[in-house]
Amino acid sequence: NNNKQVIHGPSSALKELLENALDARSTQITILVKDGGKKLLQITDNGCGMREEDAEIVCERHTTSKLEKFEDLECMETFGFR
Image 1: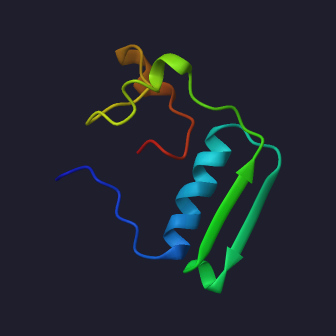
Image 2: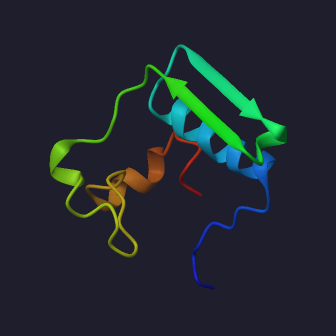
């Protein structure tokens, strides 16, 4: 188990991006697709982004800002954490 997300094509990439937008509490989402997503797949939303202090560790292995304490596992409400 390597815990990596695999993108199998434009549709799975779109699903992942939409889940991210919903997790960010977006109320408006715009999708631009060219050539079935092979040339362009763009999502624009009005959701909130990550905290500035999280930007430094975002590429570290097994990093998540969704958990601060063990009890947080009991109340996960996002699409991007499984």
